[in-house]
Length: 392
Image (cartoon, rainbow, N blue to C red; front, side, top):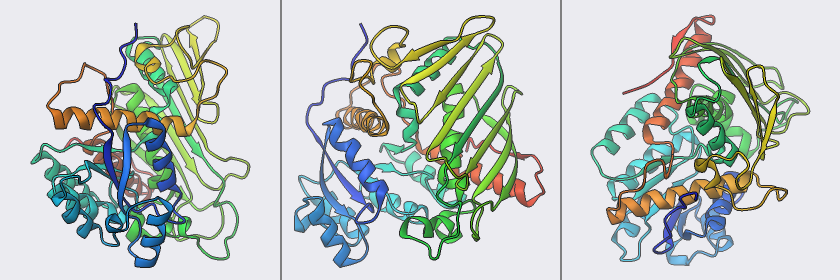
């Protein structure tokens, strides 16, 4: 019998900072929130522009008095309400994450923060320090780790199915920046602005997803990186492509390639892990399938579902039988279920069973920012190897 998530005692109350009109990521969050059936979205500072904030609040069916255009005011008012929010989801551009997270932590409200956690390492260290002084929950939304078959891969690695790591490779390949753009859009503009994105454009945007997924599945630090940044698409102020060599804590080699300038690629997050006992391969565009090849054995395709090779840690995330596809909204749902379970447990003083939830922490967020800086340092040093693992 697979241990299920604890039943909800109530729907938790969630607020949003950012994510209003024209911001796709807010709608991805909201889809997972609603599918999880563990939250009610009750408040939001969805834009700093009053007219957009109010219009977005109406779109989201928020009460007018709980629609804000200032996140600091929102934190103050919601903390004082008897029915105030339990947690806040921060979905702004990277450069605004730190100030919003600080305001809500000071108000005693649990944090759900988009990745990368901050635009600078100084801000990341500050959030880690603030969190360490509190008993608050701080989760970071590396959502691809919440696909059932990524959890399956992690459990299989932990169970020794691939043996000792020999090499690992990951790529995240898109094409939206491949051609010339007459003007930046709301979605692309801030991603190419160092004051908002930090020191890496594609590296911070999707490279951090790839970085997190490899060390999450392997449960092994990526200790060093050698990087080259390139502009391979339309003219841009920051890189749209990065090639990286990796060294893991065990000494095994790896690679990470991320680009947003590869025509014909929509959302190609692909992972390959090889050890002395076998190999695992997974492709985000075909998320229900995991390919496993034991050394000198036949390749097995494990499909998401109940039983038939599924590990308990992954089977807990399954909602539909095989043949009924699950995808990114289900990964967001899994994330928000585990966030709710963790936050409810913290608030009620309940101890969860081991491995019941596996959510990226504030330290994982800081590691993502440190990795971006390490990649940028390496590029600026002509590809020199740089330390890329942060432990405080």
